[in-house]
Length: 376
Image (cartoon, rainbow, N blue to C red; front, side, top):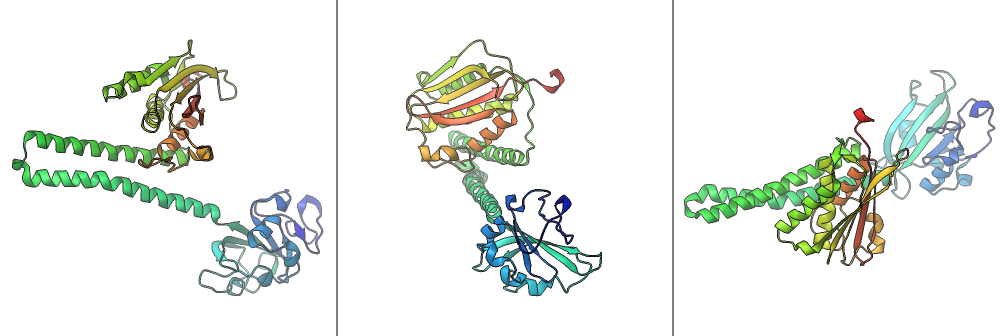
């Protein structure tokens, strides 16, 4: 950290009693902090300006050091008022010890989050040091944009089935006697399918909430992963897919797998649906024993789902498991693979995406065999 006119003594404190580092730095070099750190002395002149402060403000430390605080860091509130004149840190109430975080503007309109701490020589004495922390708002903006996009996506996905449900039920209630039994059945089947669609969307939202908050519960039971994949294949065949489109290969012996069967079904459903809907040719599912992805366990089970379609562009590989990624074909919420990754990781496993030998997409997830807590 660039410092003007100070020297440090034992335990990381400068010789005039102010902490040599702040913003949670402890004994670290302030230049290693991710947040900006600016320190002003008892006269309001800048005596400390770390590397992050340079990056956030675009002001070189050499230009800031020794300058009055209001000149080196000319902050304004969102109404255009000069912040240091408004708060008067050196002449305000002597009981103040800190300034809560708030959004302020740098020259040019760039928004930053600012907190301040008042270091006094005595509890009600004059300010000896003013320590300011600066944080870039870009990460918060990304989170807010993500939340806004999630709301917009959910609203769009809900509108279509709910419009259908409302339309058919209103029509049936108003003109029940005019329709034949076959027409009534068709409309009720459509309502039923759209209600299922809404239910799935709500379930996805709940999963995302639990994944983001780290509260996704895994109820481990013995799982026959081969039988689970077979059930999904049979469901696709019953729905009209050719049985020859699927190739299931299981390498024996497989270790006993303890996992949450419902959540593993959700993972398999998403991966197979992607392969069937977006891929081409044969969908191959390989189940093999492998090393556990979790330290301290030897055995694991790996499942690979691949197709012979166009695959995923190389530049998109690192975005496949992010929210709202939909690939080249639109449709759906784009949340499925994000949830898949969260479920696999909640089991202590890993998931990767790559290119299959036939040129299509290849998803591979590996789970530790694990065991319920009462058997561990």
